[in-house]
Length: 475
Ligand code: BYC
Image (cartoon, rainbow, N blue to C red):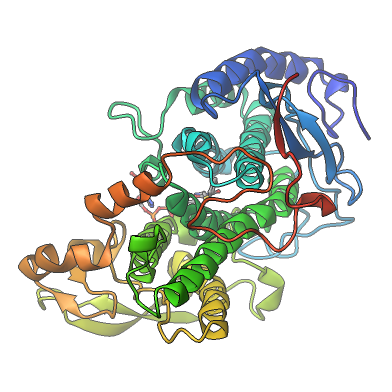
């Protein structure tokens, strides 16, 4: 239902005056944060054709209208409850799910919710200058759609903090607006969310790979025994799908245009001469964002992950697809770095529960792989023989057991010297970034026009034409 309340919601906020007051108190701080740290230059003068969730049923969460960004209806929406839902995994398997936070799991749950919550405003901060360099109005609108939904996802986590964690939760909610992406003194919690995203190739790779980590983490949280966490993340997942669409099709359209330019240049690979983005550069950005997003899954062997699983707090993606939901006996085999071996790997079996981060990473890698194969089909269709690929999981890791060593994209172990000599072949350099900024310097704000380095999409948003005025200045 469309709600006329100050904070749109389907959680009966008006019947819980204390919570309503707490959230109404947080709201102005949020809006101020959005104005300071959200899309720069697109606050009051522009109207954006966005999808707004007005309820969780299929007709309600795809409601399109023009809004000024600060007036977006950030609301609190939980997916409908599942009748007689039971805990799906871990030591409490089969018992009734919890509607309140059990005291003994309070800290762990708070930590999970804060970590998840922290990523949402972080991504808005990372992307706040992109509007000034957009390749089209269609893309500009997609950027803002992603941004407002990340803002709403922050609301979702803040709702949980305010509702179930009392004073601590309110303090954490304030901290979520105080940390800042890339800030030296108060950075965001997870590393990938402190990386700058100042060009559109970064943005599309981020929405392809990092939002896909969002998908895997949200899938695993949607299995949670804490029912409100499960219901809120389930609804967030419906919005997340569009973000990955933006990333995957964005890169796909760049590849499409690169192929066209390669043909124009007589199948030369040097499309930079024609203002395009060459495939080696695309590959470098895949290498960067895939490896950063692998890190977001945590350590390969983690007692935290084992404990989350045992307590039913955070599970695996699509738990119902597994046979054993308790997992006390099984082991997981993985390659570990043999001690003092100079990078030699050995196969080791560890209790499956301690490898839950790795299990989720497996799911994630498979999902990414399918996306890269779809990109390769564009190359195939154009008769271009180059192929894009995911780097080995050990490549460029900052978290986990491979972070102390260096590996090439094919998984070969490298000495520090070799790595320093060769890393520029595999990761974006300052020159690559300068080149990208040079071709993105002029934003394209004319309806139906696209920057030279990217092909138009196949169709518009919500069946609107491609040359629809997706973002308009106020008359
Ligand atoms: N960077 O035992 P471990 C999204 C720390 S994206 C920095 O593996 P655990 C989105 C860890 O904090 C999804 N530090 O840890 C996408 C711990 O530190 P302390 C976000 C890291 O607890 C796009 C230590 O290493 N959701 O939604 O299993 C746009 C031990 O590690 C990192 C979630 O993350 C890192 N990458 O951590 C917008 C879900 N990784 O306390 C949004 C909630 C680990 O020992 N979070 N550390 O000093 C979790 O499930 C877990 O916290 C982690 C793994 C998956 C992050």
